[in-house]
Structure formats: C-alpha cells, structure tokens
Length: 420
Image (cartoon, rainbow, N blue to C red; front, side):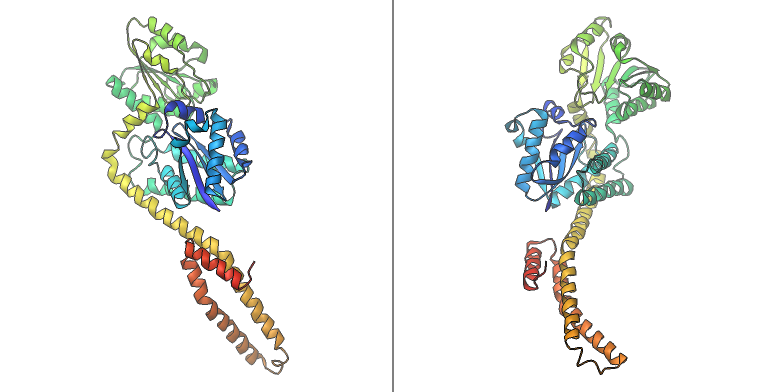
C-alpha cells in the first residue's frame, strides 16, 4: 500500500479552472464520501484552499488511484478529464510525503512561509477523520506533516514579514496606490481572510474601513475590532462610490460583485479610479469588471506574481526549510519502513519461540531429573541459541526495510518459515 497525492494549484492551471475544482467546507463531506467509494482509494484527505485542490490517499495501485482522483475532479468540476489531465501533478510514496511536508512548511504557497496553510492542513485532516475517510496511514502522514510545519516556523525565519494571503493582498493594494494612509477601504468577507485583511489595513493606516459579510454578526465583530463600520451585503453598490479600494475574500460559490453594479458605481465616482483586489477562489468579482474604464482589478494571479518578487530576499530561509523537509522525509520513511517489517520480525520470533517450547516439551521426560538451577540453564541456553540465530535476519530485515531488497527478504522469510 502506498501514499499518493494528486492535485493542481495556482502554478499549474489557470485561475478559471482552479476555481471550478474548489471544494468548499460545505461540500467537503460529499467530496470525501465520493472518494471513499472509489475502488482504488482506501483512505483520502482533500486539501482545498484558494491556491490548490489536492487529494491525498492511501492506495493499492498508483495508476488506479490516479485514475480515480482524475475522474473525481472531472465529475466534481464538470470539466472533461482531457481538459486538465496533463495539468495535474501526482506524487507517489516518498515524493508524496515530501510534497505534503513542503506544503505544510509554507514553501508551496503563493506567499512563501504563510501561516494560514498549516491550519488548513490540520483542518483538512480533521474533517477527513470526522467523515471516516482518513485512517491510520493518513493520520501518521498528516500528524508528521504538522510537526514539520511547526518546526520550519520555529527553527527558521520563514514566517517573518508578509506571510499570509490577506497580508499580501493589502501590501499589493498599498503598492498599487502608493500607500494606504488616509484611504477609504471596503472589505467584502468577514471570515479568516476578510478579518486578516481588515487588521492589515488598520495597521497600514487606512482612514476608514467598511466591512460587509453574509453573516452580519461576523461583520459587526470585525468592524468593531478595526474601529470601522458594517455595510449590509445588499448595500454594496451604494458603498462602492465612496471608497478608494475594495478587497474581497469571501467563501461564496458565486460572484458577489458583477459588471452592472460596479459600472453603476463607477458612473457616480466622478472620474476617481477604483482599485479592486479579489483574492477569493472561486472569484468574488466578475472578471469583466477589470475591463471597465477607471477600474483596476487584481486577482490571485496578480497576488502570486507580487509575492514571488519577494522570494529572492528570503532564499536563505527557504534553503533552511528545504533541509528540514528533507530530514523529516527521511525520518518518516525510516519509521514507516520499520513499521512494515515489524509484523514479519514479530512473527518470525514468535514462530521460533513456539518451536523452542515444543522441543523442550518433547524432551520433557529426559529433562525430568534436572533440578531448578539446571532447568534455568537449559532455558537460558535455548533462548540464547534462538536469539543468536535470529539476530542477523532481524538486523538485515530492518536495515533493508522500505527497499525492493527488503521486500524480497521479507517474502523469503515468510515463505521459508511458513509465516502468516
């Protein structure tokens, strides 16, 4: 049985396709149930964020698992497999482990070192456990992945500076406007992403922060935290003429700002330009809004390019994290390999002990005249003989665990000693 990961992210597919593949929190149970019914997947975890949709699985056969996940993504998105099959990435065993550890460490994010991904990895695993699609294999993998993410952030400076998508969105807006001091900003969405943007705006000196959300209580709470004001979702059109910037990051399945309402707002702005930063996947703003005169629309593709520009300055920390990931992959593989041969080693020793006891019982009549001290000597001698005979096979099995030679040795021992 092997660990497999199949997925796509902001670097491998266009945003239009990525947003079709998104699995929201509300639809995650259905997705996990669907994957659980696929013939080649024994366990499955779905990690779907604004930057990626990935399926981690324990599978009997790699190609069968790849086909199952590809078909799932096609059915889920409504896109024919031939439209995205060549854009999928897939990893197997050690490479799959390395990929998850790299993701958890923040190296595979648009914003290198972002902290949000670690919580998203944890939540993906916990939801899969709740739905019964993640078992012991995924448990060991994701538990170790979370440890790697924490170690990377503790032992390196990878998490210093702008390390979240929400912070990067605000920084990108500040760069586009030459600063946010005194700006009036509308934040659409009051979840984790929206709250992060609102806080970052307050830190950068935005003069007025308006917050809008489908959940009024959340909007109230975020607005209060940044000393802003709430705007009802149905009143967005009336708020648009008043602000300099709009930042959106909801979890809505459909757009919340369309061409017509933005065009109507632009007509009332008396020529003042409007910057809109949409970091939602699926997108909150119709792409055609970017074609309106006086409107500049930035999305996740722009954010990825913006964040990439800052990677060079932190290359030293990136290299340190990569070394940590490599060390932890080796450790995980070694522990997993030892676990695979443990049943064979245990069965071998049990079989030898059974034979030893049977032989002592067979010669019990001849040993009847021995006193207690002599019986102890015989017991010690036979145990020692068994231990010495099994020492070398046991060491070889453990040393070769996880390799093709190790598998051949394990199979040979099982056959020679008739182990179940």
